[in-house]
Amino acid sequence: MKVMLVDDEPLALQFLESQLHSIGDFNIVGAYQTSRGLIEEIAEKKPELLFLDIKIGSVNGVGLAAEIQEEHPDLPIVFVTGYQEYAVQAFELNALDYLVKPIQKDRLRKTIQRLDLDVQENDPGAQIRIICMNALQFNQNGVPLTVQWRTTKAKEVFCYLLHHAGKPVRKDVLLDRFWEETAPEKAKTQLYSTIYVIRKTLAASLPALSLSSHNQCYQLQLGNAEVDIVQWQDHINHLPALHEHSLASYLTLLQDYKGDYFAGEGYEWAESRQNQLRELWIKTAILTGAYLEEQNRLEDAISLYMRMQAEYPYLAHSYIRLMHLYDVIGETGEVVSQYERLTIMLEEEFGIAPEPELMAWYESWRVQHTRG
Image 1 (tube, helix red, strand yellow):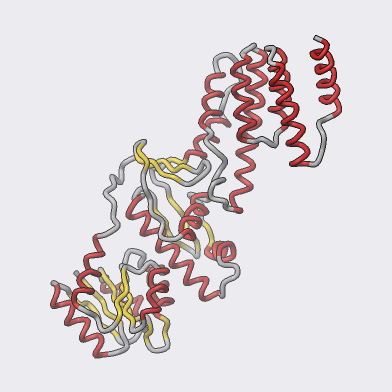
Image 2 (cartoon, rainbow, N blue to C red; image 1 turned 60 degrees about the vertical axis):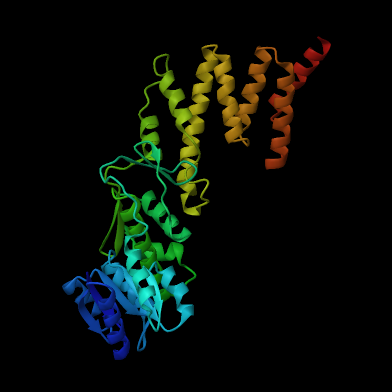
């Protein structure tokens, strides 16, 4: 294995090199006491593992590591430090490991062993399905795929890049959106660290996906992966006119909608598309419900309106249609229940009463059924 060492203490460099040679066959391709030109040296000598002092003179090794990861995302980095408290910073950057001086042989051996950890066996050609309805999930050939995110920030940035999949996203846009309150240099370091985490996660669990960097932009490529909400929207936008032969397709797509776009994740930036897709489902459901009523498929219409009410209880439409349908089939108790629930919902959510026309209809219906 080709290894590169960086430490501003000559004795520390010599000791680390001797410890490495004592536990395995390592080719030390570079040992440096300064960070000057380090990124270029890495590009030229192509080490497979980098040991980096967390403080190199006046240079912050954490920031330097972030820059290295930006240029060489697949290079594992091990921090070396004389101070235990720097370990947290090291793992925030998703370093392979950290070693506290003086480096012990057994501890070094465990570090080397970590190179083989956290890598799942995946078939790069297997079909990956990315689920965005309600919460981020993954399936591989129909089987749930566990993907471990090192940080919640990495998961959200991945989702944001997925939101713009196939399109370049500028680094300054990411910095403004996710690190607006952070000092510029620290924000840049955290961005690079987050991108590194995403790339490592993709390599370990989602090899069909890739994240490229070009012209100050990042771009997520999905390869052969499918995205549930993209397919759903495409199918519903290409539905034929609603009639007897296309009804099954309408019902299937309404059933396939498993929740609003990233609703379970709570991402503010997703709300616009979330609303757009929700309105598309509601519009299609209202159209389908009306058709079912026209075809006298009242039980199917009731089932659809009940789902609409469960998913979106603030919509008056489902209560009103259920009142009329329950009236038709003679379920008087359900008519009363729906009207009372609608009244409570409108008061609690909007501070209003039902429309005068509906109130008049219900009063007329109530009087009629009371006499009966």
